[in-house]
Amino acid sequence: MEQRRRRRRRARIAAVVTASFIALVVGGAVVAAPLLRSYGIYLVPPSPQTYAEVALDAMRQGVEATPDRYGEVRARAMASVADASDYADTYGPLAEAATELGGPHTTFNDPAAAAELFGPSSGSEAGNEPPTVTTADGVTTIRLPTLIGGGSGSDSFGQRYIDTVVDAIAAAAPHTSAWVVDLRDNHGGNVWPMLAAVAPLLDDGTVETFESVDGSTVVSVSGGAVSSDGNRQSAATKPQPKVDGPIAVVIDGMTGSSAEAVAIAFIGQSDVHVFGQPSYGFSTANQPVRLYDGAVVNLTVAVDADRTGKRYGVPIEPDTAVEDFTQLPAAINMWLADRD
Image (tube, rainbow, N blue to C red; front, top):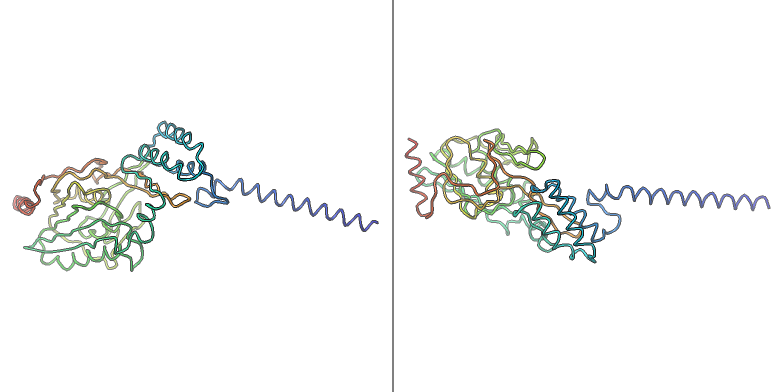
């Protein structure tokens, strides 16, 4: 009889311990869930309302997200998704909120669009055009096309983009008296390989800053490497020496986003002149935020400023307007002649 009572007591104790352990695990998971969620880790799939909350939390960094504005936009968006039954029901309100908090350069991309723009194949050679470097009559023209993605590593398209230009600049330098950086029809993309590609033409030191709602990020060049706040972002495989000579930067109405950042990196450097037409006006920095179902908020988080401190976020105005680009060589030659 006594032995039976002891067995029952042990069973009750085991049950209490088990229940306590389960409560501890569940309680800990509940407490930890918001922290895990901030790292994109979910214990269970989020509800559409939680999904929207996560997206709106990220939008707090938007360049237009002042405290009052953010509070109003968030409240309106959450009210709009209160009855949402799936993630797709939240896309419209979240897209509207993203534009209000990030400005016109911000986009909300559903999973299909995000896979195309930000997926593994987005930086493939098939989806990008290689840069070109040509020399004629002592003038070397570097044409930098749009660079979507670009990947990372020595075999990536982005690294080949950099090395193609840097190696060609080194080869052309002995025969070059002036340089042209052609950014026409460059819609932007990955700014770091673009900047590293023209690093031999940029003075070492700060070349621009990205101004956000709560601070600024310094973009600098050192030799063949480009860094943001001291963190290396891109560099040539074999950095080449700096080159001398005047630099003409060419822009047009389709020069946008990261391509505008490349143009701004040259503004304020001595012996640089900008030709062409006003740029697109998306001279801002974007940060992609990936959501649970693969959608991406490409949020504008900063405004570009040149090395003199001038802020943009508006079209870059050329120093010399060129309405008819067949007249571009003559305009550049006139500038070069007037310098002598």
